[in-house]
Image (cartoon, rainbow, N blue to C red; front, side):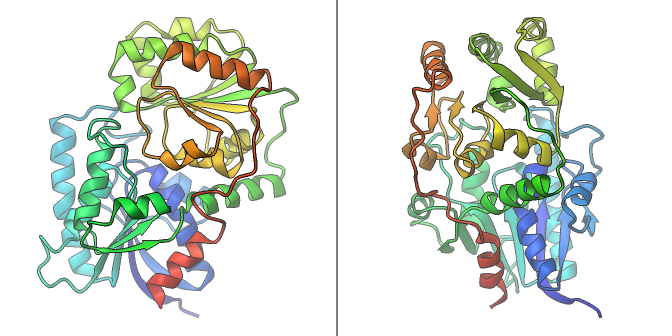
Length: 372
């Protein structure tokens, strides 16, 4: 029996976007609906699609990189030319397939390109609606994180429907021209689906000791030797076992700044290659705490109620700061060390709190909104 078509086109550029769109794709598949999957080629996605059991891209708009990312934290002429070209490639493709909705997620260059390429400004009297998933996040600074904060604001400007993740993000979108719907964050579904599957299949063994999960990859840090030195200084203070799944570009810059040797001399921190999302979520769900400069991991820490030390000056995930388990350090070395000490000495109480990003079932609500 042939599947009905939802007339939904999902534009994805990075693995992080795929992770958060995956439960929406799965929900469409569960309801026996087909959809178009357009990859911009910013990251290679085929392997992740196979792991998540969602369809592989119907269209790939640029040659995928062999390693984890196309741009290696460099916002330069090449990346800007790529983004501009992608705007018109998205426009051409959606004109050809004529969907009812064009969905894009988050805050990458692919997101911004998809929002402009499918917008009214380039498509007069367009028959489809452009939908920004995870809309309304704001750090308050165009430069932290860069270029993500700019991509978010571009996407809010050019979208017809803005799916906000929380009350705060809904308020951030009050002046937007598009229709704002507070729907929750699909990361709740993504992380829950992946963790439950890992446990069900006994995919990974539990570690028999406390450990901290480390995740460092922000562009603004990788471009700064001073910031990377601060981060290494903080990590040297960790007193329990540490697991650091190292991104290719993070390793590149640690070596460039002659910091890799220092990192390798931290005897209690184990450096591993980048792990897939299944193992990453399993490690996160069972760790004692997290040290990160990332974005989505702050949300995942709330799902599994894990203390999260944020090595950044600003965060767009401000909801987490109200829960008592997310700590914004502003890259202050002494403040970071104090929080590490308190967590390792069990002086941080993890209270019950209502997740500001909602409860499981967000993706089902999104599909319901689009197919009603």
